[in-house]
Image 1 (cartoon, rainbow, N blue to C red):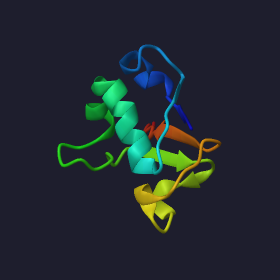
Image 2 (cartoon, rainbow, N blue to C red; image 1 turned 180 degrees about the vertical axis):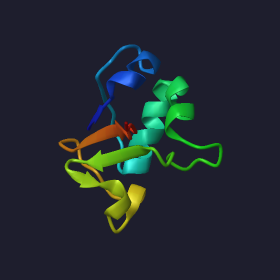
Image 3 (tube, rainbow, N blue to C red; image 1 turned 120 degrees about the horizontal axis):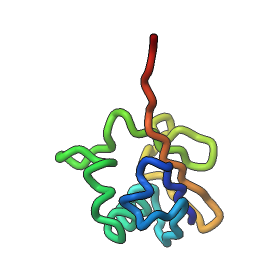
Image 4 (cartoon, one colour; image 1 turned 60 degrees about the vertical axis):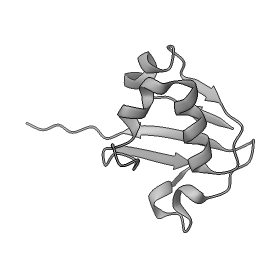
Length: 91
């Protein structure tokens, strides 16, 4: 499957905008990603191993937080994961 890396995190993934992984679940895909690029782990996960609150992950077009199995959801080679960091701002 393909994991899309957002611009602010590409520096921690050798400049890549997408990475191919072979995993059976969302959690497995993220684990494979962070094994290949260990510097990403601290940006994606808390010290307890949970996805950080300001990081949104989408399986195809579905927010993983709202999937019944969440990160245990099965994935296939044709699926995509998009990592979308929250952006705050204001006047």
